Length: 390
Image (tube, rainbow, N blue to C red; front, side, top):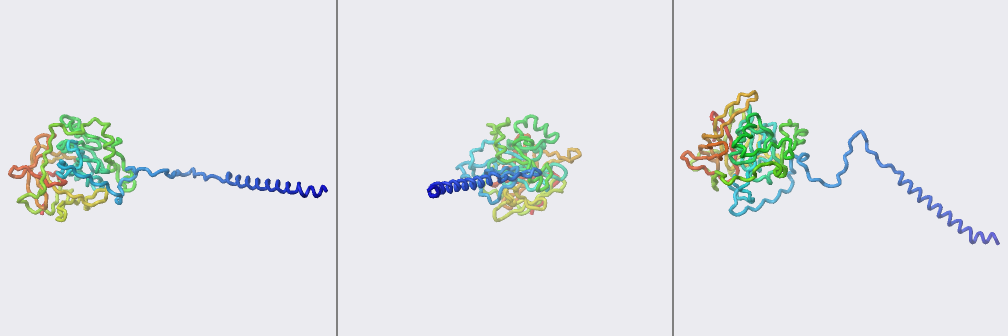
């Protein structure tokens, strides 16, 4: 009787308890296996790069050249009756009374490629020291320019030329006498921005480390940095009430009675630096070649920014006598020059009474010169030099 009772009641109970114990043991073992799986430990001999948790906005320090496949921003619609005062082109921005920006940009072969040239309205090229030339890029509107550079120092005559447009000059320091001119009167009306070492500029490590450029060719800026930094500096941002731009424009600036000008070679000072301009019948623009290569804009890689107008202004240029061979360029008074537009050229004269006055340009008979609607490239050379035009 006891045996039957044990088999009927206690034996199933014991089996059930053993099953519960077995299942619990297996579950605990699995749980312990998971907890004991070691977390990989980074190698302390090297720096680990964490995976980003979000896609950051590209910083110009890391991405010096915009992706050429990037979809460009839509072109703003021109406002009826509004014109860019530096090009005469229909204008989509109500900033005609805003002061333009003038940026001192390196132009040696070691400084190429330059950035922002295709967005500038006017480019000036002039001698600085030895056989080197530099470019001043003038922008009426920055938000279309992107990266700009490399930024170089100011000179007296650079300050004076920028002031002829009542521009805000962006530069990296000023050599010797230029600093005195910048601080003097009445050129303080200009207001210069020395951006070196400020948040308005940065050192491009791609140019330094990948392209192997020296530090002097790595200082860059962007329209965003300049605009963000502008409220922090004491500088006038609009033209004064009595300022007026003297440039005059016409739809067809081809000079009447001119001579053929489909090719021009400009030699600067001692002739060791040349710029070659060639005219395209296709788009009626002049393109620049220097340092044995086409001028390009490093922002897009687009070759040869085109110019409707090309001017060559002759003036007195002399050595300052210092060990670096720096030059002194006369920017006031008057002098002869050449004007190219539409595949033709004529001789002109330029004049400017004071260092803070705009330039005026005239035909040989005294008639004011009319530029073709579009961008301009202006070369300043010595009276001892003459361009070769054909």
